[in-house]
Image 1 (cartoon, rainbow, N blue to C red):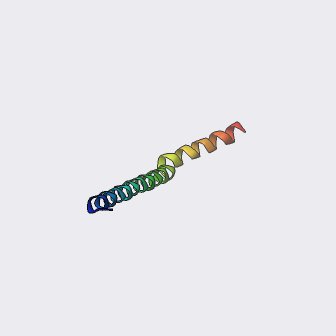
Image 2 (image 1 turned 60 degrees about the horizontal axis):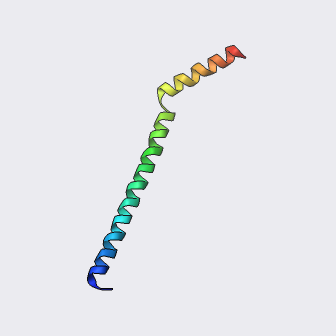
Image 3 (image 1 turned 135 degrees about the vertical axis):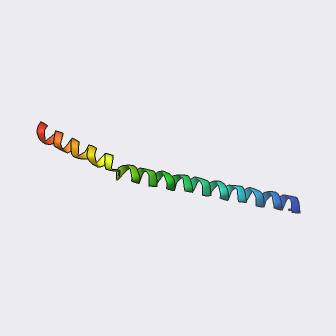
Length: 58
C-alpha cells in the first residue's frame, strides 16, 4: 500500500467514524426528546383526563 492509498483508507475510516458519531448523536437526541415528551405537563394532563373519562364510562 503506497502513501496515497494509506491516506485514502485513513480518510475513509475517519469519515465512517464521524458518520457513526453523527448517527449515535441523532439516536441519543431522539431518545431524549421522546423522554421529554413523555414527561411533559401536557401529557400528564391528558393522562388525568383519560383516567377521569375511564372512571365515568366504567
